[in-house]
Image 1 (cartoon, rainbow, N blue to C red):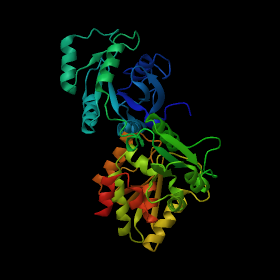
Image 2: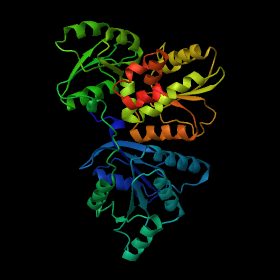
Image 3: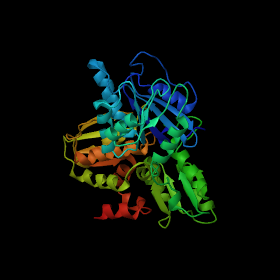
Image 4: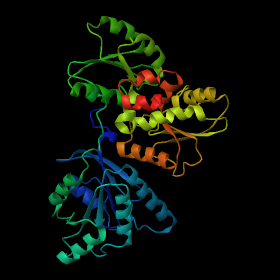
Length: 407
């Protein structure tokens, strides 16, 4: 609870061929032995995630990947997993093995990075063992379309220069908008409705609730936290009406009934639809629910894996609501964690969770993949508000999204 959440960290992925020194470079950057290092090519077989603090970048998620030149049937699977890491990468570091130089492997990876508009920092490693001529570095830079930084992970030569390049290339907008702070003025009060039930983690709040509270405090506003049964009494005890009520999506109907019409109402999931991705796209996806027919394929995607409850929102409640709306059965498929189908063309709708465990780039990638496949996508909170007929009200803080609903 004291750490920066995974999804709120700058994701830095390290790419390169086997034995190029990727893991050694991670150890040099973090000044710790956190990555397994070996002279045997292929030591890193799957992406490895390390939450670290790299000053002055701050909290980051370092991703160590398998070699882009891995061979064999298993090697091809590892390369594919390495390429999938690009979907969540905010900043890419490409490590060059000076003994081999820039080959088709590096050029293909650089092209894939450029296609996704990911900032790239090429690094010529092992400068302690190789005398790198300026013209050689210039040739590699021309092949990659980017200047290279020469470093030695072993002696730490050039590491500070590499950090400067990372700071320079790191995207300014990787975090996206605030969770809620830009909707508030200093001194505003926000009432957060937090159910405490079997699904609530014992002894703590879930991540979206914690992040919303922190963002309210960061913007000099007041946060009042209540359970759903206490909302009406809490509103009556306040000296002034709150600016907004934010609720867990599954309590929409009771909270909507207890919240005065002149008080803004939304949900944590709708806030995160904007914070993590594109609220307008998800609202447009909600309208597509009306076009569903019995037998259509629907994908339900969750960004984390969690213990299933008897009345689980993704496995039970949402499928039940959708069946009721279409008047028949639907063909549901479920994915969780980092799994996300490459081929979405067979689905008529994608229903995604709030994405609190994903970083913004990965959620934007998933939205983009849905658009490319011409498949509407909606998230839990937007869908729940829509099927209960209160989405128009819950979009009052977001005029652009409300206009899409009204079109």
